[in-house]
Length: 320
Image 1 (cartoon, rainbow, N blue to C red):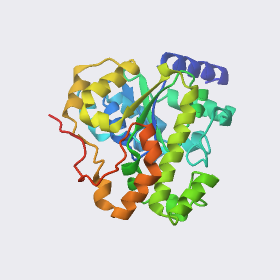
Image 2 (cartoon, one colour; image 1 turned 30 degrees about the vertical axis):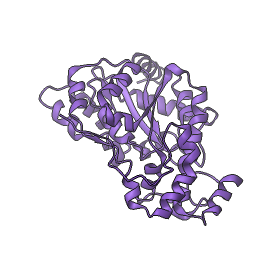
Image 3 (cartoon, rainbow, N blue to C red; image 1 turned 60 degrees about the vertical axis):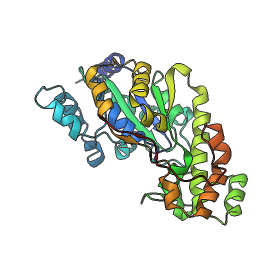
Image 4 (cartoon, helix red, strand yellow; image 1 turned 45 degrees about the vertical axis):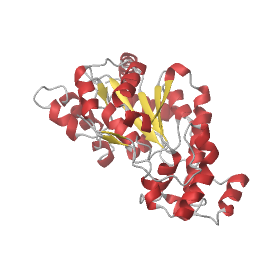
């Protein structure tokens, strides 16, 4: 195909497909569960874990999206092909996307990366599944993505910072063990460094500081996003009433509320486990994390613990 014809075909494909829907958040915040359920909508297309294993396998990913429309195959496939963040795939499209030391902004977008990302992501949706639903966590990257897709919509999934910070300490890929000089979130400010020193360079405190850094970055990023292009949800609220909140998100994304999707949401079992971190942490560690996060918890509508009330189970929605 001649270059001009190929470029015209790419522009036509981009124009026909709805604007991408990006799920963003700190990570360890329930966004993976939310993403997986969101991709069960019959009009959703996604980056599958095939691309995590083989970043160059875009044709295979698209073939899987096509196969979902086959009556005898699609139902079982949608349960087997989980969506992923696919960072190696992103990295080959836009070097630096995966592990920047600060949030990526509109001014960071280079022309070749813009063309690569637009072209590649425009080939993910199909005629029967036209809505791309993708997830990125850590730095928001909202300004960067909006520069490439000006009409993109964003779902910010947030969660109480205490279980999030505690979860950082449980995963093998957390780089905070190397200290701020070895992680992916830049140098600490003088205020952050002083806070870390105040708690004898506690890793619990550092995990809490990371959550605050990323939430501050999201606050900054969303300032330039029209209200019509971003919705924020709390994972705890989704666990309490998943149908209400997925219906809200579907309306925001202009996706029809269909029976099959409602049935999927109603039968999903969701559990916030927001108090599990207290059972895992010592009293001193709990006190450190409560103190480090206090002001930010209040800002985002979470109740900081100031008494010795007993630890209760997390919020649960049992499917059925």
